[in-house]
Amino acid sequence: MNNGMQSLRREQDHAHLILEHSPLGSGMRALLVAIGTLSVFLGIIGIVLPLVPTTPFLLLAAACYARSSEKCYQWLLNHKWFGEYIYNYRAGKGIPLKVKVTMIGFIWLTIGTTAGFTIDIVWVQIMLVCIATGVTAQLCYLPTLKREKLTRG
Image 1 (cartoon, rainbow, N blue to C red):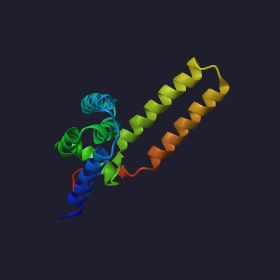
Image 2: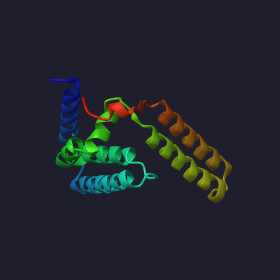
Image 3: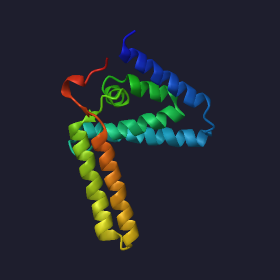
């Protein structure tokens, strides 16, 4: 079995363990499935519209599904388009440069607008800028996915 298949198998086993030991009630599971489904929808929009990032929404969907529905989680991981984004991120191959740039741009646009125009409390403005700086640093730290690495295995 190659490394890609072993990694995918570990992901599947991990999701099964999370669901088995999760104390979530049916209401919380339904909420997580709804958030995951909305995230998949937003990820689809991101595939079509260049300004909307795809990978973060699919990762959020995977996290929600892993805690609420093994069926949805497996569907997402094994989907011919979406599974690739999640696999590449979780395998440590990274995220595409376009996604990094778009995410950083959106972070600074939204936090900058909020801190500069809607919040008058200085310590909250400083906190928002610190959060944006931390998220930017984390995104820059993540490996950048190269074109030839876009497939599993």
